[in-house]
Image (cartoon, rainbow, N blue to C red; front, side, top):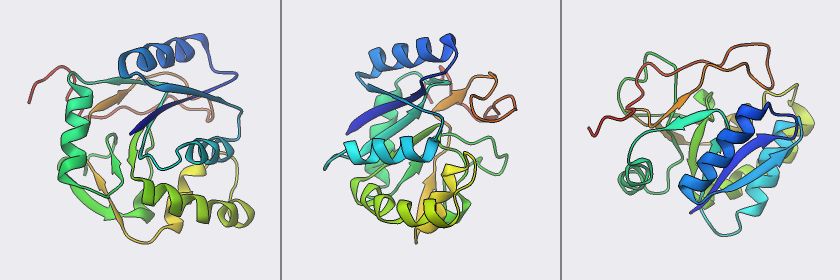
Length: 180
C-alpha cells in the first residue's frame, strides 16, 4: 500500500510541518501540488502503479495504532474504498453508502481497482462538471458503494481551509488515543 500525503505549494507552514510529521510517522510520501486539487489527485493516482493508495490530507492528526487499525479495516472490507473521517452525525456506525454520497477525503483507502476507475472517469468529469476545487465529486462518477468507517481514525485540525473560506470541520466520533 502506497501512502501519500497531499499538501499545497502555498500551504501555511503548520500544514507543511504536519505533512512532514505524518510522512515520518507513516513512512509516507508527500505530494506537493498546486491549487488545482483535481489535477493533484489525478497525479497522485497516476503515481500509484499497481499499489493500493492510502490518501491523507495535510491537516489531520491520526489516532493511536493508526496503521494497525487501518489494516484491520481493509481486511474487513477488501476491495472497497474506505473513508476514515466524517463530520456527519449520521456516521456513528460503519456504513456502506453509494459513491454519490462521498464528501470527505481527509483519509481514504483506495484499492487499486478503484484508482483505475477514477483515472478513467476523471478526464470526462474535469471536462464536463469540474468547478472550483470541488474535486471530490469525481467519486460520483463511479458506480457502486464505499465504506464510511467508524470510529473515525483521523481528526481534522480546526485550521482555515487552504481552498475554501471556511474553518475545517471536525469529527464528533474521532477515536483519538483510545485503544477501543
